[in-house]
Length: 241
Ligand SMILES: C[S@@+](CC[C@H](N)C(=O)[O-])C[C@H]1O[C@@H](n2cnc3c(N)ncnc32)[C@H](O)[C@@H]1O
Picture 1 (tube, rainbow, N blue to C red):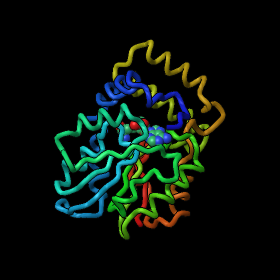
Picture 2: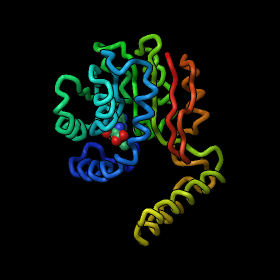
Picture 3: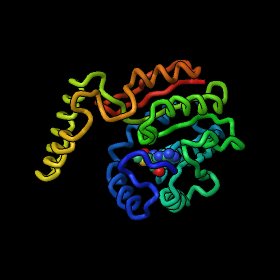
């Protein structure tokens, strides 16, 4: 699995620490996951197959499987330690949660023998690739494996529209951290990261802005493309096949 940023998803200890911190955020993420479920274009009792791209420890799949009792989720990820955790945490879903290990830089990353799929979802994954060209190709690969009427929903980090807005968003994020009780050291570390970040003079550290993502989805044939929720640099966007 190719490594493109500071995350070391192949390390047991890194993944263990990352999952511990991320799980503390899950209650705050629940509303977004709920919106993803609300946008899925099928009835609660539908027998559907959904791919969760970069599933991590499986938080999105868990939400979907609780909401759709006849659904099967395939948790795709490139990280062995992450999939090990997903298997443990999702064991109660038995055959309704399957895992598929593959690298998103590999053209055959999708579990095609199990497709085509009713929906493909992803949370906080694709920005890790740091490669917008590859992300555009992945959008095309996803579009090709969706059933007619199926949906792709991506909850991910996007750049601000302008460098000035990027600076403003980072300031807001810092104020939120302070209000949430972050220590002085944490806030100072955030300021240092902000000074070091490519955001100085650019519109952000992520592969692309929201408009570029929406255009890339339209370019590979998605329709009804939209951003369904946005808060600063986090957005839930997607389209229908
Ligand atoms: C930030 S975590 C998100 C996990 C989960 N979806 C969530 O919302 O908590 C990103 C995940 O993407 C996976 N990932 C990153 N780059 C990848 C690649 N090139 N191929 C496959 N998976 C990758 C990592 O292993 C990790 O589990």
